[in-house]
Amino acid sequence: MRDVIIIGGGAAGLGAALYSARFSLDTMCIAKEFGGTGNIAHKVDNWIGDPGISGFDLMQRFEKHVKEYNVPLISDEVKEIKKIEGGFEVVGKETYQGKTIILAVGMKHRELGIPGEKEFAGNGVHYCYTCDGPLYKDKNIAVVGGGDSAALGALMLKDYAKKVSMLYRGEKLRAEPFNSEAVEKSENVEIITKVNVVEVLGDETGMTKVKLDNGDEMVLDGLFIEIGHIPLNELAKKLEVKLDEKGFVEVENDQSTNVEGVYVAGDLSNITGLKQFITSASQGSIAAQSAYHYIMKNKWGKLKW
Image 1: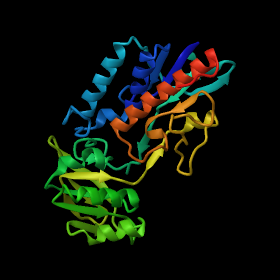
Image 2: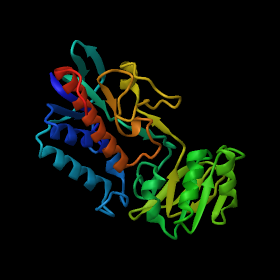
Image 3: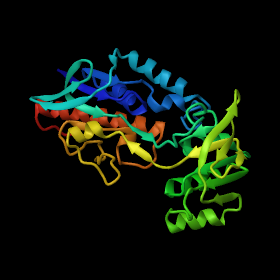
Image 4: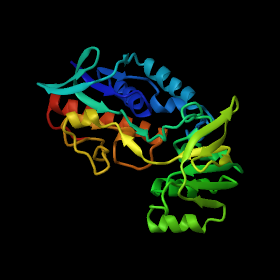
């Protein structure tokens, strides 16, 4: 039985793997795809020390670093986690056992599900304004959505872009009044309601325009889809980990959950709304330290740290 099994291969999972190995814990990291959603980030300008690095290249560096500590990186899709005596059983194509679990499976952005969306993802189509907004200085861009995520996105993007168009299917923005009013007062933000984006168009250089359900086409440099997120919480539910009202896992400052021996790091946790590479890696390292303390406590009794 290993000391730690980490499920998830993005910034949080690989960050946890690195620190777990540095604590000399017998560690394994399992992921369906290493790098996760980070792989599609076209350009990462907020990773300290590597401005402009692509998400794929950054995740490759993470993997290389973790491999230097001889941590097994297992490509498998975990279907179930069961509590057993002394720890947990993790079931995928193979079965694994660990004393502690670090869940770092993240979340996925809600997609429009329209033609061209996947084709131009990361090359004109984006799901993270904090990550990719600075790429569109003095450009014409649009934000899809009418809630707080879209409103906050528009408010940030307006400081970079020449013009921001908010495209919303409803009659009126449903963001909090303060956010809605701030958007309405912004000189370079246009709110277009009762409209849906039905197709993303472009060429070999990337996205160039979108088609609307009223027949119009809008020429754009970038499109930010901000219609919410879906936390990947199925494994957490099977462990009976406590979730908040949005489906994210409730964690303490040490990334621990209400289930002893289970820690959650990265986008799946509710500890911060800032879902970034840097915060995920930080939470992964904290979760690894907490798992180490838990294992040492069980081995040696109550310790002071």
